[in-house]
Image (tube, rainbow, N blue to C red; front, side, top):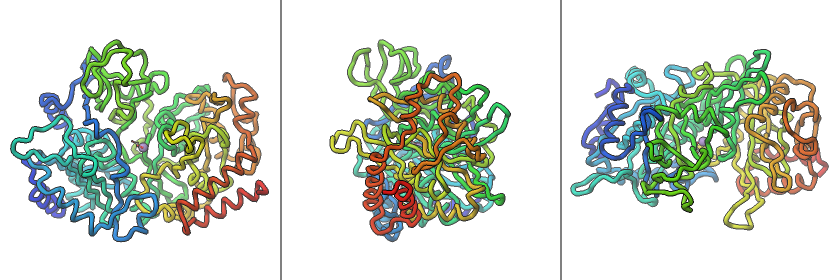
Length: 594
Ligand code: OXD
Ligand code: MN
């Protein structure tokens, strides 16, 4: 079958146990993609969009029960619970492996088993890692073709003996006699398992066909398994965008940023700077692998080859670059279909009079239900992106790391940490304020999402924090990226104080100046803040009172914040609060005289 015995033995074992009707090795050729796409269209599982409006693009509709990552069915399975820590669902691997293996029995009956060799990161690069996903979902095969580097080139490296992460996926819907295949096969929620086995460097996913549950290169591999590999090898696998910035003098710098969902990560990765003469280019929008090189600097790669972005709210106004990136060769999932066979979603622009909604039903303007799903997605190749940086396939040196969240109060527009360790503290307290929770008592409370990695750390979060510190010890604060906390979302009387989007370039400018130690700052108990005249507001419509509010450090707010952080650390880490966090919290209190 292939020239790698480990891979062959694995394929044979799975063929025998999962009972597929045939096996297809993914070659990565465009023709193979095109034929499978055509197959999906003729079998009624996908709709070909209007080739004049959206060339070579497809629309899929998932089962209404299978529309997002299922965190409560996502597991880290190891030999002891301590290694998974408090942020992960854990089941002993001696229990879960046999249980899942049993579920996989004959689960591919009547289906084709696709064997997809893939590389996370550019093929052949030192920092890249290889995997093979075995799946019975043609939708997954098509998406993996876009989201990763797949096919013969990768297989060849594996055949030369390179190791790979075994990723097994089944939709959990065998086509035994008399069973017809639904448009989107999947298993009921209680049978879904998205399991990482970090000790084995292995992923088993069963029962879901959607996004991060099924495209195993993304969250399962590039974050959960990779974070465990990275811990052993001394690097970081992070939920971060990578952005290239060029100032009017032509100087180039790269930054990364981690934000909880719905904080505009993809928008920042594709920012259109309003500051004159500035240029921003995209390296990645979701995941960064970071490693300290021999020169002591931290370098990043984007391990992915595509965008798997939320469509909702994406428009020529909010993110023209994303709109340009999905003009062709794109897979849409759970968006609405227009009368001329194009796509539509909420926030895209003018509402058409009639659509076919994501369930396949007629939808008319004025109807209450939305025609697209809130987590509808586009899958598009990076190379579609008009602002893709030419360095997207080489490691880039990182000057600044941005952490942030949605905080209507307390946190200023931007602040810089006093040290790398203080930056780790910033990462640990990240989060967004709950504004429209169904449980009223939670409104106003902060939902913390440390490093935007809460559902993605493949091991104990206390060890993860310590690992950040250990990585930093490979270099010095001088050479390491500078760390910033940003908050585009501060409000006064219910109104945003900062315009956001392209105007965020003004903040990025200050950040880059600070990476060169420009003396344009003041010190405050919470970190380094811009002098008010240091933010370049040329041509911007920002009122002076707003600026003052954006940088206000309110002692009462910070008393509450400190108490909230203390509670959160105690609840989360129990008796394992990392020393670095204890020390940084103490220093913060000292600077305030609390
Ligand atoms: C996410 C995503 O859920 O990128 O973070 O899909
Ligand atoms: Mn993400």
